Image 1 (cartoon, rainbow, N blue to C red):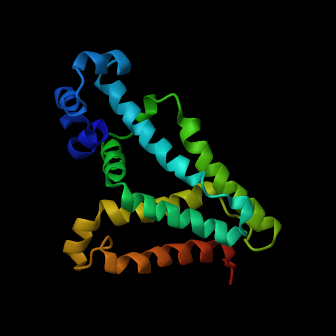
Image 2: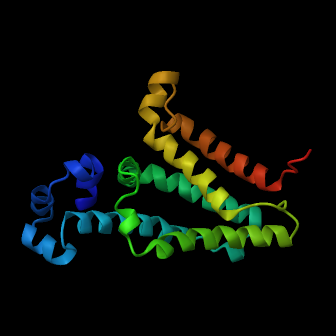
Image 3: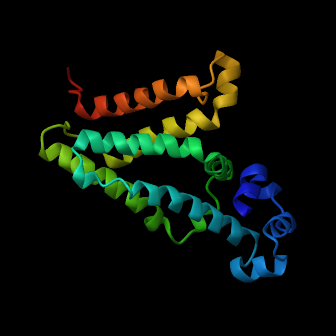
Amino acid sequence: MATEEFADKGYTGARIDDIALRTQTTKKMIYYYFGDKEGLYRAVLERSIASIRAEEQQVHVGDLDPLTALRRVIELTFDYHERHPDFVRLMAGENILRGEQLRKSGVRDELASPALALLSEIVERGLRTGVFRQGIDAVDLHFAITSFSFFRMSNQFTFEWLFESNPATPENRERLRKLLSDMVTGYVTANPDS
């Protein structure tokens, strides 16, 4: 419920009174557990990021060849952003605030490391087997995969108005999902000098 409140109204618009009402608790209990509104908001952000990390860990990359493993991570990320619009709105709102609350989080490594470890393992295996080209960076891969998946959901309304095509509609879904997968796998396997 707090997630929905912050996603719908942003940090500044969300009210602890409304969250308490929606969660059938009291402001006093919220303050007891989280300290203040900032603490609750930060916990919501951290839990939201931890949720996608937990799903990523369900991809057992060691059982898959590197390209298939990478495609699975891409598809999972694409699907996750689609299934969790509150996550997209929360992250957009926190970016408007310039990451102010996440900068105060003491769990950055726990939130970032699993994603980078997963992609790094795929890249290392791809290099070892000769499937991937040299010079691939896990952070760059994460950025490319996430930015496409995020933009598709966060900017669907303005994109639709401008270009008369909504990237989040069911008829565009599979084509764009494949496009992202093909772009990223093409990047890791291509010879950039050719």
